[in-house]
Image (tube, rainbow, N blue to C red; front, side, top):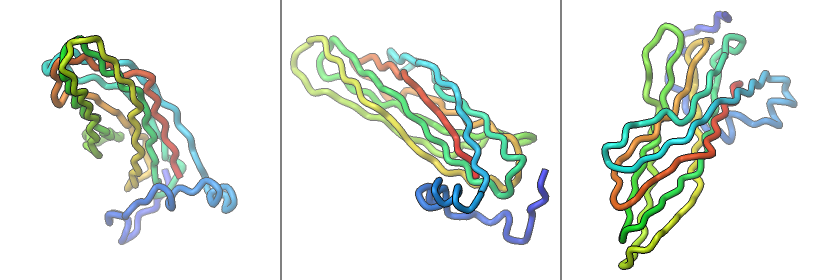
Length: 172
């Protein structure tokens, strides 16, 4: 493992994915770029009491990098369906990180919300993509697991299916 500790090493650094991980610049300057592909699973939510589901998972190994910057790219399709009037759904996506010899750290949350106003109880289907990007600066070179969990914030008169999940990480 590289020894890259210095007096400023543990200070919080701001991170802008667009400027901090620039593929063209990294290639031109011979910076190491690592790509990690993860796994995704489908999840269906039928009520407010539906259990949370880990829908995306990727392992990132930065042991060859010093003060690594990791960009997580998550995408999915959210399908809302209902046979009742006025369906409402709120699904919360939570990104967490677990590294060697440390506990799980909540990194961020994103909320998907949809509602369809209709007076008629007719079959309805609404499909949309849900994506996010997140940059994470690691304080040490190590192996970390990134996990995205989907849970119900609220669900009324609807069924929600999260599918076509993709998760990737780029480290530099």
